[in-house]
Length: 470
Picture 1 (tube, rainbow, N blue to C red):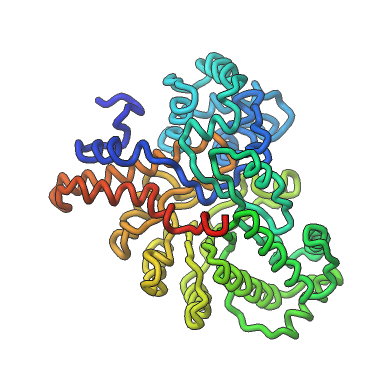
Picture 2: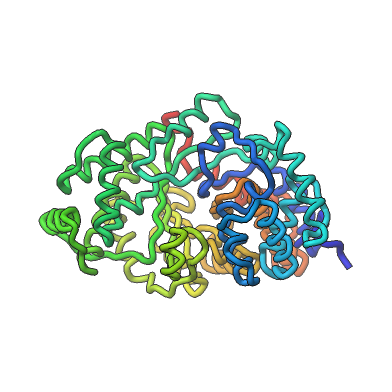
C-alpha cells in the first residue's frame, strides 16, 4: 500500500513518475488567471496566522464547512481566528474524496514541511508551527511565491482600478512578474441601475472625465484599456453566464445607456444588446493590442439571496449553470473572425456537459496563424479536481491537440494555492505514463518529455505577449 501523498502521488507507472520528476516538477509556474490581491504582493504582507492566509476569502473551504454543519460565525463571522481554524480542522476529515483534502495536505507539506494529517487532535500543533513560520521573513507573501517557483502572475482587475500596486511591484524590481488582467464585468452590469451609476462615478474618476453619454462611456473604457496596456496588461477576462449575440444600433445603445443612467431598469433584450455591443468592442480592442481574451462561461452565481444581502458576492453561494453555450459563442467568435479581428482566445466552461462543445468549438476558429490560437482553458472552478481535469485533458486530446494546450491556472484568492499546479502536472504525467506503458503511445522519452514541458510551462510562455513593449 502506498503512503498518502508520497513523492509518487497520483503517479501509477514508472513512466509517469519519470515524466513528472524529470520534466514537470521543477518548471516555473505561470499563473495567467487568479484573484490574488496585488496590494499584499506589493507590500510583501506578513500574515498574522494560518487562518488569515488560508481561510479568509476561500469560499471553497467555506462551502465545505457549511455543508459540515459549521455555524457562519466560525466562517465569516466574529469568532476568533483560532476558533475558525479549529472548525476547519474538524471539517477536514469529512472532506475525504473532495479535492480540498488533497489540497489541504499538499499545502501543509509544500509550504510548511508538515506531513501530519489535519484533524481536531492535530490542529493546535499544526496551527502553532505554521504561525511560527509565517512570522519569519521568508514566509511573507513574496517568499511564499518564490518557494513555489512562481514566475508570472496575472491578477483580475476592474477598469476603474488604479493599478498602483502593480506599478509598485514593477518599480521594486521584484523577481516575480505581477501583471493586471482587465475584467470589465461591472461595465456591462446594467441590470441594477443604482449600482451601475455608482460604477460610472468610479470609472469617471479613474479616467479623469465625466461620463454623461454612451460615447463618453466608451471613451472612458478605451482610456482605461490603453492605461492597462501601458502597465503591462496583455490579458482580458470576462465572467459570463453565456454569450448574447443580439444585433444593436448606436441609437439603441445610446437610449439604453440614458435609460439606465436615469435610474430605470432595462428589460432583458436591452441588457443583451448592451452586453453584446460591449463584448464586441472589448474584443476589438484586445485584437488591436495583441492581447489574449479569456471567457469564463456557465457559472450560476449568487443563488442564495439572503446570504448575498448579508455577505455580498463571491462568498460561496454559486453553482454550475445549465445555460446554452454553443450557438451564441459560435456567432460571437465568427463575427470577429470573418473580419480578421479575432484575438487569441481562451474559453473556460463551468458545466462538464459543455466539455465536448468547447473542445470542438476551438477548432472552428484556429486559422493557422498561431499554434493553438483559440484554446479550451483548464478545468475551472467546480471542475478543477482529479476527475474534472482528467475529463478535460481527455476531451481535448480526443478532439484537438493536447500538445498545444497552455495548461493550468489557480483561479484562486489564496497565496497557498500553488500546489494546484503540481496536482495538474501529476495528473497529466500519470495519463501519459499509463498510455505509454499500455502501448497506446510510443516510448519516446525525448518527445514526450518535450510535450509535458510545453503543456506545463512553455506553451503559455509563448502564447502571451508579456515582453512586447516592456
